[in-house]
Length: 226
Image 1 (cartoon, rainbow, N blue to C red):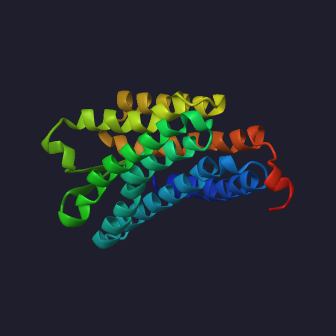
Image 2 (image 1 turned 120 degrees about the vertical axis):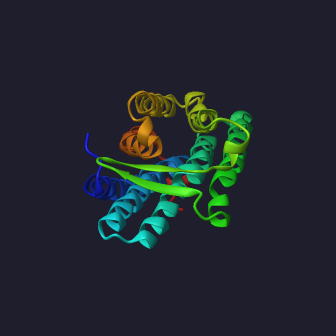
Image 3 (image 1 turned 90 degrees about the horizontal axis):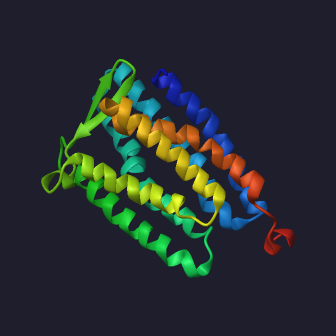
């Protein structure tokens, strides 16, 4: 598998329109699926930013690399641990929803503590270019109290556990796919864990397109044209 500007831009070119169509489908059928339907589009935007990171390196533009690396890491650290449990929240019966809102709040706290310090501490985010991958390194706040592997484990738990415990069987399947990506990345791509994991997650988000088209059923509001 080759990771490059072309790979990132191609993923974005597929995911952004696919995500837009999926959002429209959810809006016209069952609006409970709107948050999760947005995931392919959001993954596509993240891949677009990584393509621009590659481009900045090709142009020897440090400012461009820094700017788009920050945009990319917004999704990696902050968006995914909030949006994934938030999306699952709307798929659950009312009696179970509070669990997923707790996950979203925890994800927001975790993500903010990891991402926001980049703005206050110059040099905490370091972008290194490898032959076929980008390694996002540097310092994160939790490095001062725990090993980085434990930080990643907590992050993955907040992102994946809501999917695996969902009452929606296709959300569970998406959780399985993301778990497979996380495991494969840990075993073979630790040198560029964040980049490879997010690229794999972006590819797996195409399953959501199938999920929304297969499972979303018309609601009364949609049928009434509201």
